Amino acid sequence: MDWNQIVKPIMAGLKKHEPFPWPRTDAGRLKIIGTLQELLPNDDIPKACLGLSNEAMNRRLRELISPYLKSSDQELTAQLAIWIVKQWGGIHRGTNSIPKWCRDLSGFNHKAVASFVSQIGIARISSWSKIIAFAEPTTYAIYDARTTIAINCRLHDIGYREGFFMPTGRNTHVEPAARLLKQTNFKEVFGYRNYLDLIGEISREDAYADILGVEMDLFTNAPLIASTFVTKTQTISFASR
Image 1 (tube, rainbow, N blue to C red):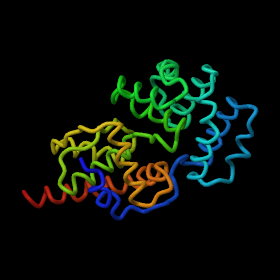
Image 2 (cartoon, rainbow, N blue to C red; image 1 turned 90 degrees about the vertical axis):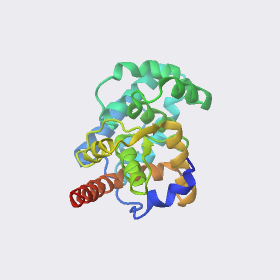
Image 3 (cartoon, rainbow, N blue to C red; image 1 turned 135 degrees about the vertical axis):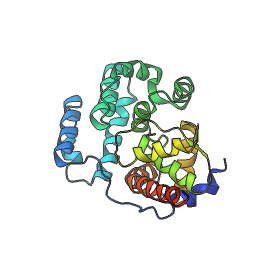
């Protein structure tokens, strides 16, 4: 697919730089900061993060954590990776696989990541993509249900019937759109490398500073994109009866 040709339709009407909705509450923010402080006691995490917007904190956390993930301390790397998936990402199952992932990704250089992605495919993609996105936030993006469902809704709207693999999500606003897409026999043929290609193209064509800005805007706008898609599709379906 020529990703350049679909950047404008995907981003049409998308509200840029809206407040990033994670963490959802002040209590959640304090929990995230507190649990990270326990892993990095020599860093003043509250000082580095409190008072920042969610968007700025998201960036700052990656800046703080990245050097530790790429260090030779494998135990700390694994602990931080588990923190990323569980505490920051809210995924509580399957953390026993993470230490092995970290060994396979040792150093997070391009060759190690490429080999890991080739071997693991789409399995647990919402989890491991968070880890590599924290290790190299200007190179890799988080691949999750919200963003990929939103992209697929836009692709369907402009006539495509092939799009990205959609992981199972928990957001009640986007999951109905995923179910509806599957009912239309929308094929999930693209994976992580394709996703990076598209995110990179959006970043270049839509004047973003980096792919993290694209990732956050898609995540933020996803519920509205998905709910609009569901309403429109159901209205068309009802009218055609």
